[in-house]
Length: 298
Image (cartoon, rainbow, N blue to C red):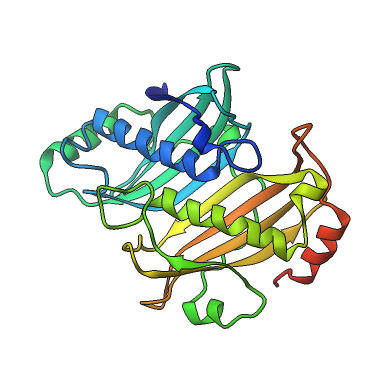
């Protein structure tokens, strides 16, 4: 396997911590995007003042959350080119906690690209020649597990908006937190919308974190992006509960542009019930399970 490049070094800040006591999912994505941009610039696929948005369009994002990141943790992000084809690349990233030297999360970012300049094409050809195989298997800790076998539900706008079994978990205006240089939202902004939706999903399950001391932690997310919406458009998120096991449950989320009536992105997620005192996975509370079973979708 190719050696991973250390491209990014940072630490977890207080404002990145959510009500579960660990770094919120949107900040993992934010730091991953920053690390990926640095990696592409170091590989001479992007040159200043360009950004990776100039030539690369993010199509898919897969994340495995392996260990919690809590406030004050110093970490690095490591990167390597995972796969190269004629019009796509996959970049692999790891976030490593420097206190424990353990990997806290792994990312696979799939981009399509179209180069109109020779320098980047030459750099890409050089990278491809320097890896032993242009399609390598990711490490075992980055392989899909909880979402393995879950069929994609890439539905049309009308199919989602008219289905009463799907929970409306967010409705508002598209706003940027992370992508200040552009008018469009980015993947971290999309993850932030899901983060805002979570309390509504817990309410649907009639679950109280304050009463039970049991919250949740993401294990995996997989995004499939169709378009990154412009700021100010009306956005609705609808969520469908796909599976329930003893300790985990999975959702599919549809990002819907109400102005253009299109599906912007689809995200699948696996969540584990977690005791917020012991920080261990626990069985889904009985009351919550009974309620969730009522809203399972086919």
